[in-house]
Length: 510
Image 1 (cartoon, rainbow, N blue to C red):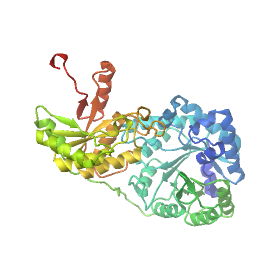
Image 2 (cartoon, rainbow, N blue to C red):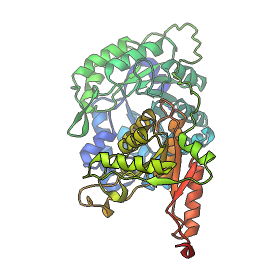
Image 3 (cartoon, helix red, strand yellow):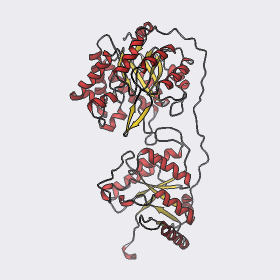
Image 4 (cartoon, rainbow, N blue to C red):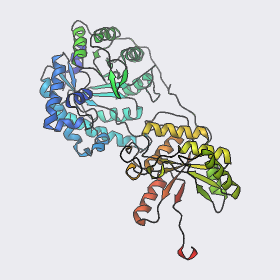
């Protein structure tokens, strides 16, 4: 049994600083699975060197290189079967450096489930955390540190899994500004939840020092538990496309003093911090006595989360056409990239006079540059008063741009989207210059993303204005039919409400 909690009563402590970004900087490798470095002899030595640098700087607690070593994250690197091994070895590497004088904390980060993509039941999430915790326990960690949690559902699952182990539990809320995480949950709600699971230490990390201090002050009014605070090295800045943190190490001496004065028992560093930042904090900790016990009045928190109330779901004009017209005539329209846009509109008006029911506008069909699909669909629908379906390619925009695009479509009155995977740039006229974007891998994932927006949820679980997009998908009946039918079932399960095919003609009728 670890004597961590007994020691915490006697003195304040200092954790290490950033680990993942340090490893990326030292190895020059930002693409591989950082947690997997534990099992690679060419990288594990560097992991040990980083641990050693923090011990030499005065850290009382070092974290294992396992922040993302859970089954969901490791599956992205085809390493799901190595959860136990990576966590066990991560603990052993840290222990070898720490010896008996420094505590080893098993680092557990959030799963960061793709909220718009795949649902995970809470009991399933608990199993994912259970596996990681077992690996860390097998490796001999002194305590568990759950850090940077913003999703209270994941936090509950993680802390529930920890009930099966004897290690002390430190829980840290991540990304808090003005008392809330980016998902809208207040620190008070997290404190009440975590206290119910009997955590031993609670606090915040992964924000600038002033946000961290404000959060600490709020938490200290809600609980008498020991507090932990691990600020970033200032606010992130973008430097030539990369995230950079500018706060110099000497500022951390003042940060540590202010945090200790606020009643914090454990300080440390998060993003952008290094051994020198920790050294400054350690120098303050040496001359700091543990905080006096806090008297906390009973606090009853029901919920302060921001919830966007769903409004009534609007029925798309496209949906009405499909329901009311026995034989629908839809015309695919493409604006010429070199011609006058007015010609495109005039053609649409002529077809409208002939009685077409719908228009649909492709999105960079053939991986070629065309007029923007949203602009084309919007103008066509405005000028002709014919409901228009906009195609949207999953592989042409990153996740952020796609969500913004869909929110823009909803606001512009484009109520229907045909979700397609999109043509690979290799088949187009920019094959030497353009790249496929793999954030959203297929039309199935795009359909699930649209479903999330229709429920008022972004991919990361944050609330947004609820959309009412009537989504469809494509189907190619002229290819091998069996796999196409299976793929079609997945599209329907993902939320496709209508299906478009290429035109089919009977030979006798041609």
